[in-house]
Length: 228
Image 1: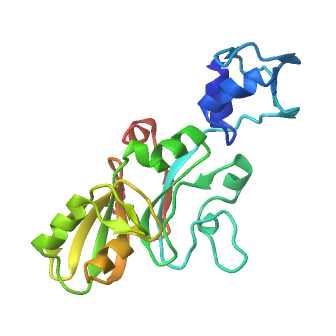
Image 2 (image 1 turned 60 degrees about the horizontal axis):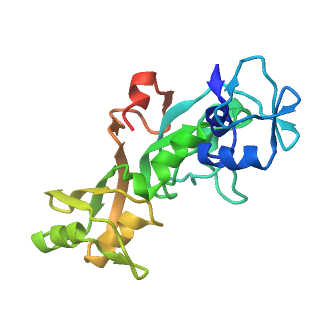
Image 3 (image 1 turned 30 degrees about the horizontal axis):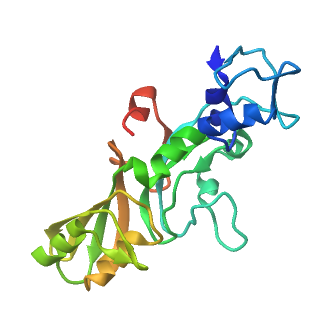
C-alpha cells in the first residue's frame, strides 16, 4: 500500500503538500468516495480520481542521458530537435520529462523522470543540489575570479548563491553551482571576461556522468537514485 499524497505526487504535476489542499477541496476520490485524508492508504487495486479523471499509475522511471549538442531540453519544440528524440519513445506515454535544462549548445548529464517529487527536489534552489560543469573558455581563471564566484555574483540585479570556480589548466575550469538560472555558467564566466567555448555538465548531486557516450542513456538503480 502507498500513501495518497505520495501516489498523487508521483503520477501527477502536484506535490505532496498540494494533496492536503486537494483533499480539503474535495477534488480527490478513492473508489467512488471522497478521499478521507492526505495520508490515506491506497492499495494497488484502488481507483483514484483527480477532478473526475483517473490517476494512471505508471512504472517509476529515473534515468540519465549524456546529452549531445544540438538538442533542446524540452518535450516538444516547433523548430529544434528535442532530447526526447534520444530516449525511448514510450517514455512520453509514461509521463517522463527532462529535469531542469541544458541549453542547446551544452552537453552532459541530464536527468529524466516521471516522479514529480524527485524533479522538484533537483530543481528547487532551496534544496541546494550541486551541479558541476567542465568548462573550456578564453583566458585563464585567477584568484580574483575564484573569489568573485565564492562571494556570490550578480545576474540581472539578483545575487546568486556562492559558487565554486576551480581552474584546471589554461582556458579550462570546473564550476559548481547550486542554482539553475538561464545560461548561468556561461554568463558568470563572461562577467569575469572568460567566454565559454565548450560546456559539459559532469555531475548532479553525487551522481557522476562517468564515461557514457554522447547520446547514451540508462535507467538508474535504486542505489544511484539515492545519490541526489
